[in-house]
Each structure stands twice: as structure tokens, then as C-alpha cells.
Image (cartoon, rainbow, N blue to C red):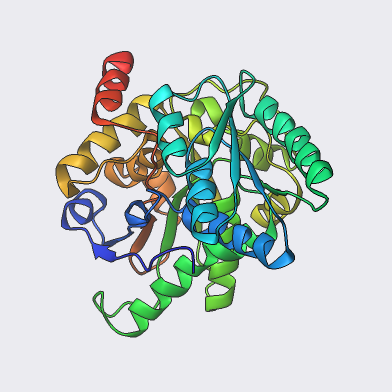
Length: 323
């Protein structure tokens, strides 16, 4: 198993803000710093079982660290292609996990195209395929992420968190949609398909919200947000189809709201998360009635997805940037 069983915490400070019980699934406590350890780890294990000799990842940070960490555990060499926007210190973190880091392109799309080329080259030279570790778009990734809901169901069944039988809503952040898809699958497996998901993006990366409003994929063109982990220009395929079928409530917040929630969560819980995670937390802290009123009876379940692409110094720079 590539991930650990993370705590489910009852947050008194967030209960006060939202005027209802709030349970925190603490994915920030994963060894790689984010929920990516679940899905990326599962995909890497699948590749290992299929006999691949090398893993190639395209990522701005969290998925790359998860691929590097998983590859080291599995004894497989890993190459991670990052865009030029990935900070130098983040490249170093990936390299310390034993991966080769290649910088290519202005954004993830260019980095991913280069990763596909490198994987093909490695496979041709080695005589056996290299596994391309996509950050969010693979069934193994989704099934890996779904395990967090199974853990929540077990905790609630054991009466660990106040006797609730099911969450009233799940609040999570959306980037490419891998976490959303995994949670959708996890809810279905738990018999909780009726539970709404409040799917939060920042306004500069609201590709899911735009697509759900249009009822079809929409390319938002450019990513304009400090929450770079939410930087998917387009949501489509099975992820969008599943979101349109189920009670998914899209929501967009400002960068300032996301960063403010990171600071408040740090003060409340002594855990540092990146703005991509703070986006979801801000909805609970700010308690917008038009959004949280969509929740059913029962506690709000917040996926604290974490994120390795943050330091205290970086958070302070973002705070100064947004005023």
C-alpha cells in the first residue's frame, strides 16, 4: 500500500465558522504531503505489476513527488518533467526522492508532452515500456483516491466522530479532477451517492465550474491563480460526465480567500497547506449560505488535500501579493 491511513479530525474552530460539525480528512499527513500518494501510488504499483522498467511523470509538484516516492519504494527509476514555473526548491524536493528532474515548457501541458516523448524513448531503448504517470487521469488513480472515503466510512461506523452515519456534504478542491473522481467512486462504494460534493476552484482556474455551467468541456485558455495545483485548463471525459450525473456543486473562490484560509488553518490546526487546498477550506471558513445550504443533514467532510508546493515563506509572499 502506497499511502497511510490518515486521521479524521473533528474541528472545533471550523465548527464555529460553519455552524455545524466539520470533519477533516487529513491528507496533508501523507508521506508525500498530499492525497496524491494514494492514487499516484496505486498507479505506480499497477505499472510495476505490468513489468514496466521506468516511471515518467509530468507534474508541477505534488504528483511528481508522489511518483518519485512511489518509484523509490518499488525499486523503479523515475523521471519527472516539471514546467519552468515549478520553484527550484520544489525541484530539489523531487530530486531528493531519487528522481531525475527535467525542466521543460511554460506550463504543465508542455511538460506532459515532453514526458510522453521521454517515455517513448526510454521504452524503445530498454526494450520494455515505460509507465507514464499522469497526474490525475487514470482509473487506478481514481480507485486509489477512493480509499479515503472507505476510511471515513469505517470511522463513522465505529462511532468515532459523534455518531454520524454519513457526511452531509464533502468539500474538496478540484484541479484536473482526479480527487473529485476518486471521491465520487468512494461515495458510490459506501452507498453515499446522494451526498453532495462541493467542488471548489479558484476563479483563475475554474475549468470545472465553466464546463458544468455549459454542460460540455470548456477550455479556459490560461491559468491565472497562485493555486497552481488547480491549473487544469480543461475538464472533460469521464470526470466531467460523472460530475454532471451526480450532486456536484461547483464553486469558485478568490486567491485572497484561498490564501486567507491557509493562514487561518495554520493558526487553528498547526498544519501548513497550499492555496489549492485552502480554496476548499475557505468555503467552510466563510460559510456562504448559497453553497453550504446544499448540504444534507450530517457533518461537513473536508478533504484537507495538503500540498507540498508551499513553505511559510512562500505563503507570506502570496499574502503580500494579494494584500
